Length: 115
Image 1 (tube, rainbow, N blue to C red):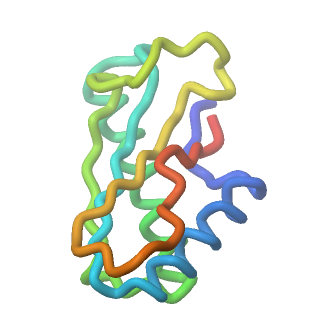
Image 2: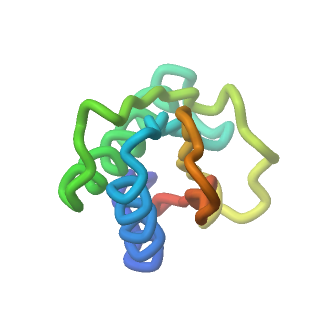
């Protein structure tokens, strides 16, 4: 079954992302939900939406303000690469918008949800 839960290893990445976002309040975040080509377009859009919501809810639970985060689902429409391995078929991309003040680490742009 294709799911939208966050794997333990990815939670660590999201924890670091949440800390970075809290320390850099001038940035907004867009969460993109992606799927592979399996399933109908409607199913994949809904799955991408659930994946993005899981990520959004996790970041909020870690103290990121909800008014700084938005999300969108692309389903299987904008895959970065064809899925070769079913375990890597679901992707969440985190995109920043805002003013960079000084140096610092950027967010991991490819956090994956459990497939």
